Amino acid sequence: MITPADFWGANYYKNPPLTEAALALAEERLGVTLPPEYVDLLRVQNGGYTARFAYPMSTQTSWADDHVPFDEMAGVVVDPDHGGVHNILLSQSMAEEWELPPNQVLLAGDGHWWITLDYRGSTVPAVAWLDVETGEDIEVAPTFRDFLKGLVPASQFEDMLDETAAEGISFKWLPERIEVTIEDGPDPRREVHCLTLEQRLEPGETGWTMSKIFLPANWGVLSHGFEGQDLCLVLTDGRTFKINRDNYGDLSMAVMECYSKGIAALENAWRVHAEV
Image (cartoon, rainbow, N blue to C red; front, top):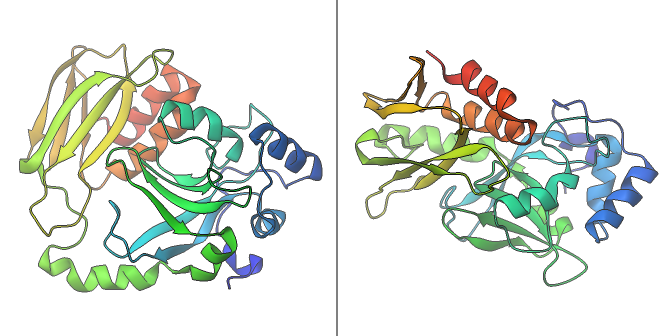
């Protein structure tokens, strides 16, 4: 099994060290007892990016035929002004906004999919994979300890993708098959619209089929559509934003981080990652 010393990568959001008081507060607020193996990892580093792992799966998910990613893991941050997304105390608010099942502690995810501690069946949680768009609700491992025992270096699956990329089996971004819609966001308290991308895959193809990203509700979108590989959003004030295969992941993560910080932060994420 992976040891705490080998588990962690960068503490990107600079989460403070875990304290006993913070741990007790987290368990009280969430109404759970956290797995001891999880707590042991947080005593070494209180959340952040991992050393890049994957968990082999016998069940296909929206991520891949044979694995799910585990590149990050949330810690415990009690300071509401700290910022950052690697924090299990965001679980309840995020679960409400994304309409997730009850009794979940969110370990990792991007808003569309999540890896969670699932307390629906027991006070000892399973590890679950949830996908908001596809409705997937799959047990990954019966306990967090079993989950740790099953983790492997993500490079094992990246090597497989490299070998098959020439055959078109890697990440797909197919503009001719992507339908784009803009609608109201899921939470009326947030001044956001939701940009939804739906990609049609042929039978037997793997890849994403739906993804959503938020944009400020005060934007007037004059037009949107693909120009080659770029999805172009033209605003009524003349600004243009482009989304493509190369920048979508970074943009999506930045938008999720800024979602609860207000319109100015959300607009800045778009400006940094997508404005032309």
